[in-house]
Length: 610
Ligand code: GLC
Image 1 (tube, helix red, strand yellow):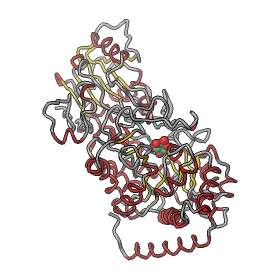
Image 2 (spheres, rainbow, N blue to C red; image 1 turned 180 degrees about the vertical axis):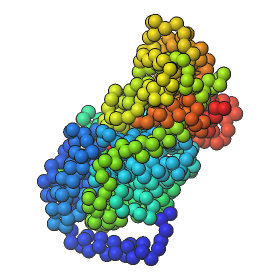
Image 3 (cartoon, rainbow, N blue to C red; image 1 turned 90 degrees about the vertical axis):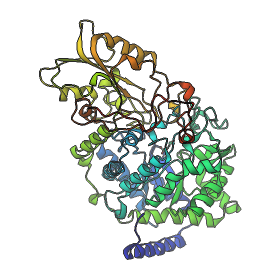
Image 4 (tube, helix red, strand yellow; image 1 turned 135 degrees about the vertical axis):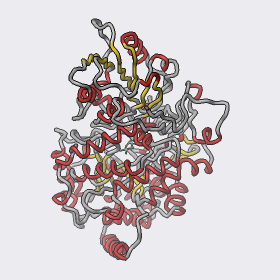
């Protein structure tokens, strides 16, 4: 809770006056401009000025080229200057998905995805991760983070499971609010190095039912935000209001208490009604009952899914309580349609002034009218040693030891020889997962970092011989003491990662079988965005480790592997024994203690090596 003190009260009074004064001077066009958010690929700075656009974003992969911190800073500053050339000089709010570090930017520190942070169960650590993320963002002039995702994933088949901290709403509330405090730096919100948080996606995005995703047939492929691969993402959450509140709403209550002043609305539906058109949940509940005084932003083109009639999309979403629309490309159409709706009386002018008042209030609270890039952290802070050390600590604390026969872990660093195998063992892209540089992530050296193999090389003694092959082929090798096999999920984001069968793929199974005969002891390390079905393969290795999607600092893994630190990670999701148990981890089931279902590992499981 941001403490009220006399300075805060004075600030609030001043801001209230400033907003009222500004609103009274703005034309309808200027107000609608503030409610419009456009992707940087679609807008010229001249339009930012001409239309008084309120916000620009970089969707996943919407990067300047070359993709450097310096170019990011110049791109954002160019658009900001255009905004300041408008009649009222209202600053632009630039938004990105810095969901595990400022992860669009080459050279940024990439932290573990939320599933790994969830395994740490450490709110102080999560707050520090968010803090450093905000510092790296501010160094590029970007002051709005579409994070934290406070989904409470209930079905591991969802491609956004790894964006969730846990299946347990209490854990999500604790870690989500810590993340908000970190981004906004508590009472220093608006100071250099702080950014606006945006808990997402309100509400129930993690509770949709498999197979309920519907594509809006009136949208062309390029306009679709849900393609044929989406089976549960953006689907329908078919539960009672009591369960919606008990499982999915609490993280927003905590995030608002932590000071969150923007919230992103979910693509999904609740019992058949699109959240983007749900006035009772957006206005009556969130703004009314919960007293949320910030502003609501739509998701990527999400209002277009409400109706085949775009006029209805605009009217329904704005009247439901949306304040800013992530268009993100056809912004002229949005602006003229909303103007038409106001002039016809289908959208009351009071709704517009309320929306713009909320947006302007947050811009003042975020210090946008005063902040100068020269006072912000310098680009050199991106990927700095201190930030990477924190990322390494987060990786270390996220590691969950699932099995450890014959006390395989910790490994002896002066071991004679060791085999390392698997495509992801020496591949930053596969180690980071989705939302890294590109929307769907990438393969290979996509950004500076330390791979698992490089971390092993830095850890073992000079006398140790390391044999590495991504495919586990070691034709001239007869026997080694220890083998490390790294299995992975290919990077994915959103519904692209919706996966009907979580069983290991043949490549992973073959890789383990190929390396097994070579080793006295074998450790399998998993770079995955969720638990996978591994029961049948478990007997093939003495040790199994869940490393999730650790980001750029794999030395956090070897610190546990070789005993510098004991593993402390605990499972943030129930680990199913088979697909018949999916969705097992639904919070209701676990809470009721369904005695007829025994998962492979329960929520909260994690061994500590001796
Ligand atoms: C995406 C995601 C959302 C993200 C937004 C902007 O579709 O649903 O999490 O913040 O678009 O990239």
